[in-house]
Length: 207
Image 1 (spheres, rainbow, N blue to C red):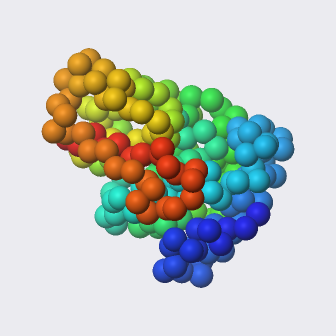
Image 2: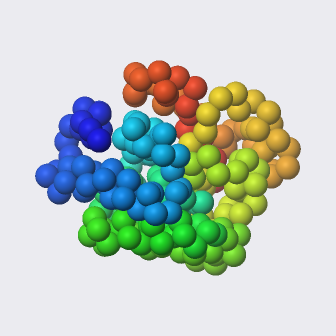
């Protein structure tokens, strides 16, 4: 697994961040062999499809030190773990309703010695803590995500999405009461040139 694609786009990583990112792939591969949360065919493109995709959020926004970010439906730890590596002064709360996925998050967090990650085995709608911002990656439609966490965040929700979002955004404004003025959509391909990102987008639902 070659993580150089990450350092290509993020050349200012510290030595510790480089160590953590280079170790993330082998650690995920190890645990994925026991608890399959990432397609094994997809592991060959791990740093492109999972790590770099997660870190596209860092091209869009910088998380202030001390802020609290909820990762909804984190699965095997994405986008939360790569973001936690990049923003060590921000606390990330990685939430998933499936226990085996949270177990992987806990193992990865321990292996990488990440002190700014908490793993929450819970349904997103049942979490009662307040957060500055929520993030998600291909978890649920925008309107559903809003119904889960809108009243728990100060600044809103950032989602990694793909394809044509016209209908999903229209349904979001119709059913959630969010106005178009609160929705910002950007193409990830403006930062990353690989064809994988051609239809990938960040959607920011802003409070």
